[in-house]
Length: 451
Image (cartoon, rainbow, N blue to C red):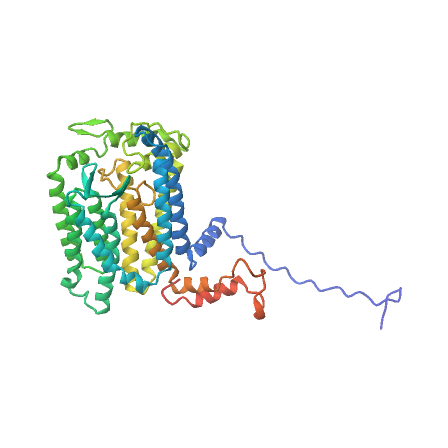
């Protein structure tokens, strides 16, 4: 064996391998899009969007109610936090309803459909009884509960129509009856017209529009043919035109669309114009929380129907776009839940709730922006009003329950490690769990159209 001069064996040098060609750098925008798409398509995305988005809207709404209602409360010789305390109490009660609804099984939701509908019809009929019903701002749609507490039964009529309509259409779909137009319309449309008639007796056309939107949403999800859908829409349109033409107040509201001066012809557009003034003076980041000028008696209903205008004045364009983004995320999550389920009741109920919240938000914000007539409906989960907040939070609980019930979401929730009571990485006799393992197992469990 040949050795070196020092007597040591020669050092064998490793053979150099040809360098592998460098992978082409991925476009940062493409990489960001890929990661965002993966995160957006996870099983629990809808669950977190509904839960987080609704809670953010409620919390921001409480802040804006406190800011927008102080001057109104002081003008009524009440404490500045009077309306905020009532809204906070309603939010606490609504939180209990949301938690209960999110934990209830689907069968119990379906069992509550008829009792809630019967209770809503009974209370809406009580509104028209002299001595029981109350008139607020010209609408006979309230019942006094004693003191300063009132309830608007028509708000619970929205929840009743969603649950009962979803249960009705689901049972008919299970019996394969939705292929016949009479089964698709009866008794859904007559009962809806009964609710609409009770609401219109009190003169609240804004709530009637929301119920009509819920009816159309359920019919659309049920697969109503175009001619049938167009027929119901035409009848509703004709009735709406008649109701508007026969009411000077509604005609005046219609004339205020796009108004820029408080006096626009025969109509007094004070509220609509000052709502535009509030939005215009907010700028990009607003004048600051609590620094609104229009809420000092210039803008009527600043803490209810026109709270979005005060938000624009105090938080600016950034604040209003944030509110719009939260409602858009909530609407997308509701559509995703309705589109990825195999349960017909879940599909109709999720679609009905999404239609309800989205349509009401569009009508309220459109009126504040001067694009739609002022319908007198609050911004869901945001405006002051316990009667509107309680059923809406229960409906959000429905969406959360449906989002948790998706097969892939159920598998992902079942395999999540508890945050407390176990050391991280101690997975028992099987060793530490791996997040990528959970991801693989959850992807296998997707049997309801999850991508």
